[in-house]
Image 1: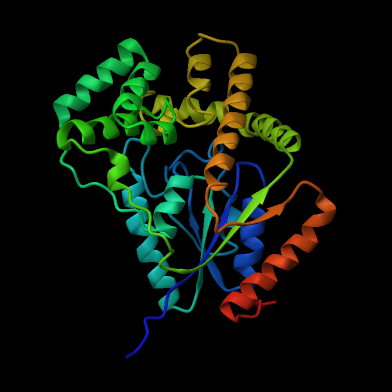
Image 2: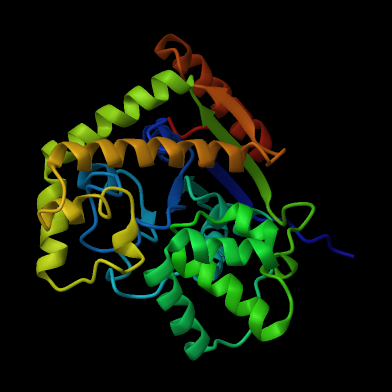
Length: 319
């Protein structure tokens, strides 16, 4: 009997601004790899600065996937990501390329590494519209509280501002009597021959980097990017427009708040997001963590990671 050979996969995770992009480019270049974006926002065209996409020159360094594949008003979900990423991983393995999933959206990444099973429960447009009205009139917190009453596990995982997914979770419960958490079964072991690298950093330094990066995004033209999206008719209520850096600048562009408040709001929300990212990833026991706080330690960290990959996949770097 022939044993099934598991497909190879490298995953690089960590909070925003910790340095995932630079590491992934170096590793993918040396190990004949290709990068799959594990970010729920980088799929949208025209949303480049606020989503911290790699630059055109960086994107040209190694092949990238699942970036700029949707318009901001097109639907995208973790189930779509899971299917697309799995197909790409198979294709790369067949072409003797090493796939790297790189990003900070924990649910998206873990849905692939541990093959979550998602509900195919039918949709109820009338219920969805009613729940959206509830969010509009009573607020996202009230809608989230309703979910917490029926499915506390999913409510703990979803942020109150993630209205679309909160609505979907309530919709699944109302239409089937089952909780979304009942449908999202996590395989005990990954179906892949996987190495998961986690990058972390002293919280004070990480927050400093986040604050500085937001300032650089403003200098790079984030305000103009958001204004352009509004001018092209994209509704502020779209899931894409609720992303970090976009949601906070819309009221500024409408003259409702000052630029200083908008920037402070982006920085604060991004810091909170980084905290939630770390909380998610620290629940994954398979991650091998590397502290990127001290720049002097980084060469040793990178060398150790290269040795891990070479040993796991019996593959020498392409230096």
